[in-house]
Image (tube, rainbow, N blue to C red; front, side, top):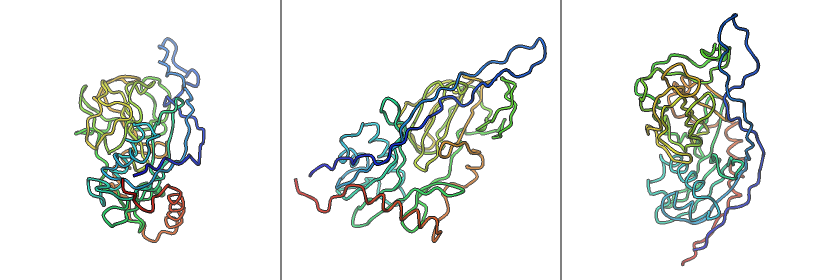
Amino acid sequence: MPRIPLAAAVLAVPLLGVASFAAWSGPAPRPAGSAAPERLAPVLAVPVTVDTLFLGGYARGSFAEAVRELSSDLSEAERAMIGRHLDKIFLPVVPAEGMGTGGRLRVAYERVARPDGSTRSIRVLAAEAAVGGTLHTAFFHEGAAAAGYFDALGRSLDPAAWAQPLEVARVTSPFRMDRLHPILRRVLPHTGVDFAAVYGTPVRATGDGSVAFAGERGGYGNLVEIQHPNGYTTRYAHLSRIAVGRDQGVSQGDVIGYVGATGLATGPHLHYEVRRRGQPVDPLAVSAGDGPARDLGYDPAWRAERRELGRLLARAPTLLSRRRP
């Protein structure tokens, strides 16, 4: 059975990713004799490249095995990311064995690459799996209120609500754009929510995804960032210890670290962020959304976007008939 190579990228856009969440913009007035505030690390602009790629053909086994068979020119980390995303996207409609004894798979996805060429994150834009005589299609859609995956009829494929990062979550500092920073003594945006917790409390992933970053980052201290298949990312900061590695797959509820006070923190707590297309949103508002997005039905905007994504998916390689080995 032949392998169908990954098609060439059709879009490549250089962007700048910011490696620190805030910048020091000058000294703040302070009373005479008071100590100078601690300064944040300078902002470091890191170029990234965003491109759109396609894969497709006849494959068998789990989604991870199918992607590995159809895209030998990709890194193992990138193939694993795509496989995990497909597992999550098709979970409500495709059996756990994925492609099973064989079927046709086509995928159009967006990739964000680091300066060294490694894959930072991926997002499946559209996918099609013909398994067991049934054609399953998934389209990514971002509406005004939420983002997620939908089938060709506009029915949501997102099966689970967001979980809490801590078993007991008590908010000590909410999401707001004008908070007085307790250490810097400046009014700065607070782009997440702070939860009170005892040092060493396990911190859990609030949804399935892939670890995009795990390490130390400026005022965040020890940080874990997870990219989720529905277009969101979550951040877990000030950790005392990190329990996952970059590019690792995680499931909702997995322990990804432990509460600490690293970075700019007055004491042990968890700083938790949710970002949508890179922009911070209130984590409590997202959690209150009760998980799955609504069915789109005959929404005109959705129907237009579905047509565009269908045309994009049609560019993925395909195999009309199976050749026997």
